[in-house]
Length: 158
Image (cartoon, rainbow, N blue to C red; front, side):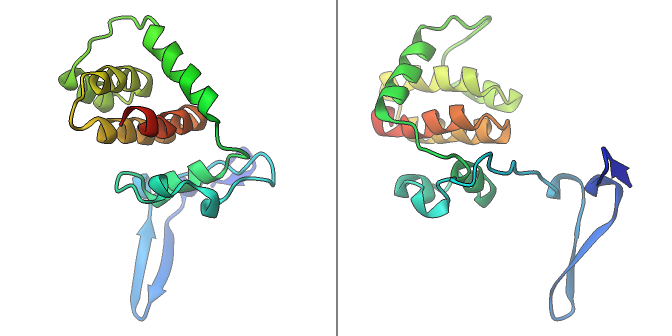
């Protein structure tokens, strides 16, 4: 039942009481992990920008990951991030909307973002959606800094 000295939730049958006569079982993909904040000074949910909280793309788990940082990246950081990614050579990179969704299926948030930037520059009507999907993918890959920089780029690209 233990892995590295702690209970492994994948090795036990977890059941929780909901209300009345209703219960739920947690196993497989229903179990997920959220990193604990490194510092006690995380920004928390209340300090998340309204446009991030209002998104229909981010789950509660995603918002929790956004909230664990100790500061929100500034505009210069977002500008540098976008410039570096635009200029970065990515092996076997293909552009276009079909390529974006292929990179999404592969869980490759870096290639997704490069594609989203290019599509945004061509005034693609779904630019905001593509950027939010990229940030969500980065969060699911636990690349919180990339996710923040991507999510904030909506103001500049979307």
